[in-house]
Image 1 (cartoon, rainbow, N blue to C red):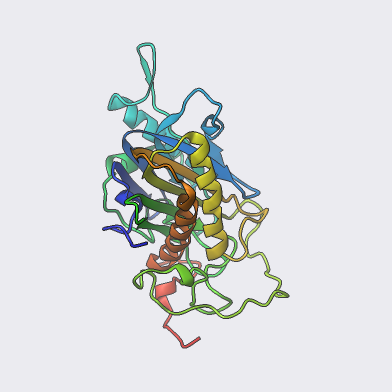
Image 2 (tube, rainbow, N blue to C red):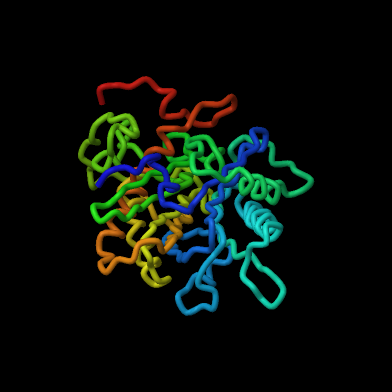
Length: 328
């Protein structure tokens, strides 16, 4: 496996990502949009998810493709970012045709960042505008770290953020991941700066600080957030042609990437969720490697989210880059 040209989910041809955030709000939204509708599925393994339109992603539902996927801060308020994206797509003439009407299909997921120090005393929900702004900003190359849905994210140890990574398989298929990391668990071992995802790192993409030490099984992690305050929400994508059922299996397998990169993960306090997207460019007979590639990409993207996060005035947590490297 090797990185794609940008080492971003947009190495999957036909996909673009847009970010929008408000520094005063200390939150933001991120949208993945296709040049045309794409097959999508979802797998939820966390105990506290917040979602929109995920029921229609089941393989037996009428609608088999979506126009965009949204990741957003703002807890339940952030689901309004999907409406902003839908309104923007409708203005473009995009959407599922129902007679003369067009209904953009925009599933989304949110993370909790309401207690991160930002100004949340809004008179009007700001996420509709953030979603629409993110759609307008969609491009192949986009910012990581303190950006979009990860702008105000935190983790059990370090400041969180937005991450992405990609890989090109020997058969020419591309797989990518996009993630907003706001987890209860830690992406590094103990108090060190060594990422749990280090075994899957490619080309020093998150610092090449070495492998973590051995995890002591008897160690008992203490929750640093309360119920509903944490989550890791992600999208994995490929240009391989997949049915909705096959895409869902890729999303399920991709959760392994969360478990590799965050300890602990999938707790009752987290809303861990993975969307899967397929643009259908490459017809392949064997989908065996896609789940493994998606999990590896997602683990790398999680580490990159924290690695790329930058410090800002008023931070409640240190950013990984703001702490001097040690020999741990």
